[in-house]
Length: 398
Image (cartoon, rainbow, N blue to C red; front, side, top):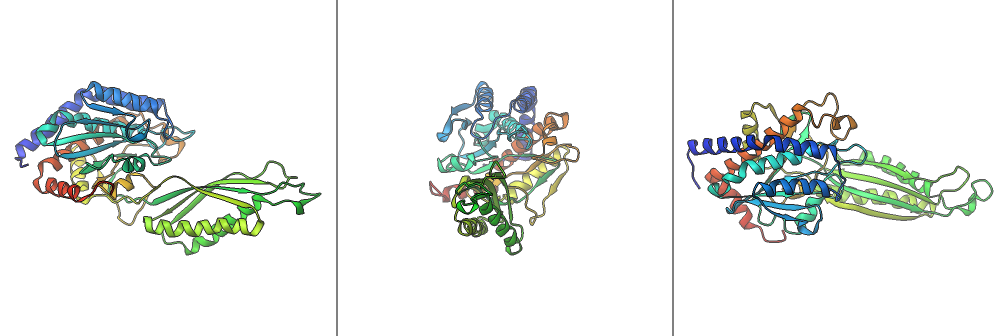
């Protein structure tokens, strides 16, 4: 497809005007999600709110998609260039939308609405994908396995943050559930009859701490003990914990996870307790953002008056299941910023900034910047050809 500058400008103007008509609806969605947080794989009301909204706007909607009750696919257009816009809407336990997923998800809806009337003229299929359980479990990984991205040529979303940025790389992560089972005994009268599960956990934690000096730079192991006995005069026969293991790449993660497993096995070996160590949810891969798409998004966001930082490629922050998508499909995952005082995501204070006028502006600007990026991809002959060629080179199940 070829286009003139005038046609490109007209498409952008059309997308902007369309989003303006939906502005109140999209902001209302963001506020509704924020007021009614739901946890991973349980986002039934959020999924229903979004699918009802886009179905009224004319999208072809598949609910409970890809074997997940709270996933969906909503499409507009029938072009050969399929652009997936990923909507997140799960919250965090106890602190609600402290990661801003009400902003993330609503911005994706805004982008899809802005693009829908243009899709066929641009040779696009706009696929709004509802992706549950980003905070825990990894719904996008489940959806990848189920074929949700098989026909997708490019994927995108924005993420709430204190500032706008493009190009951030994230860490690969594996979440672990740890449980030691010992033997209870009276701690004074017959301690020798017991097997101390809490001691097993302590030894493992010391081993992990000792290993930190040898970890590859940038790797992180963090965890919390969730139980370790109930009474000081009873040898604990049960100790549990959850741990996150992170590293720069999936390959480094596999090596570190094996070493961390050995640390927990050491606790069992030293005390005689039995160890049950399980992976929780899906592993997340490191995020690999597409440079050309990132340049297009940055230009679009700056044209809307935003200041967008280019992230240091050596700086890694957090983890996301969008990383797994990026290993298969050209992907962007820029930050969309708004004033949140001196706090940051996953802090309780971040939650209360999620429905401010600045957050509402981020929903609209993030949505429109993604829509303009998709328009660029559809109308730039080189970018369009590159994306279609990469999709054609993949085989189903990759």
